[in-house]
Image (cartoon, rainbow, N blue to C red; front, side, top):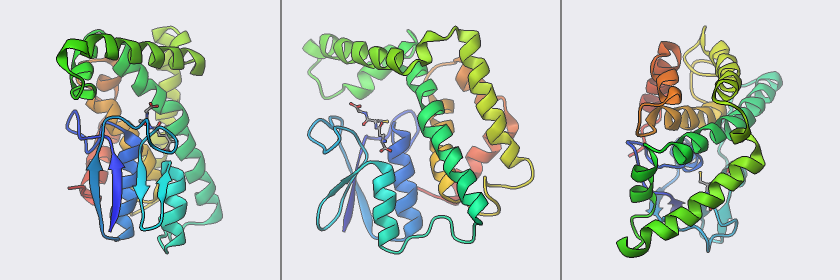
Length: 232
Ligand SMILES: N[C@@H](CCC(=O)N[C@@H](CS)C(=O)NCC(=O)O)C(=O)O
C-alpha cells in the first residue's frame, strides 16, 4: 500500500498544500491503492517539504519526482496528447507551481486578517503557550522567502497585474474545452487546479479570492475538476 504523507485538510481543501493535492490527484488517477497520512512538520522528510510518497522501497519526495515514480509504474497522465500539448502542459505546470503558487503564499502569510486563522491551523500541534513565538519565527522566515523570490517586492497593483496576465493565459485554454488540454483532466489540470482552488479558498475576503470567485470561467473550471477527480 502506498502512503501519501501530506499536510492536513484546511480551508475546505483536501490539503492546505496544492502540491499535496496535486499528488493526491495523480494517485487517484493512477488507480493504485493508496492512503493518506497527515503531518504538520516536514523537517524530517528528505527535502524537508511535503508531499512525500512512501512506497514499499523508499520515500519519494517532491510531487514531480512522485509523478516520475508513478509513471515508472505505468501511469500515463497525458495519454493521447501531442508533443506540442505536452510542451504546453509543462509550461502551464511551471506557471502554476513557480509563479501562481507564490501569490497564494503571499496572500496567506502577509494578510493580517488571515494570519490568526493560519496560525491556529498550521501550528495547532504547538502548545498554546509557545504557539505565538514559534509561529512568528516561521512567519518571519516565510516572509524572507517571499522577499528572496521577489513576489513581495511588487506593489499590490503590480502584483495583481502579474497575476492577471497568468490567469488570462490559463483562461485562454479553457474557452473552448472543459479541461486545459481537452475533454478530460491531464497533468496540467492536476497542477493548475490545486493552485487556483487554494487561491479561492484563502480564509478571508482578499483581492485574490475575489478575483477567482468572480471569474465564472475559472470558478466553473475549478468545480469541474473537483467533480472529475473526487478526493475522499
Ligand atoms: N517542489 C515541491 C514543492 C513542495 C512544497 O513547496 N511544499 C511546501 C508546502 S506547499 C512545504 O512543504 N513547505 C514546508 C517548508 O518549506 O518548510 C513539490 O513539487 O512537491
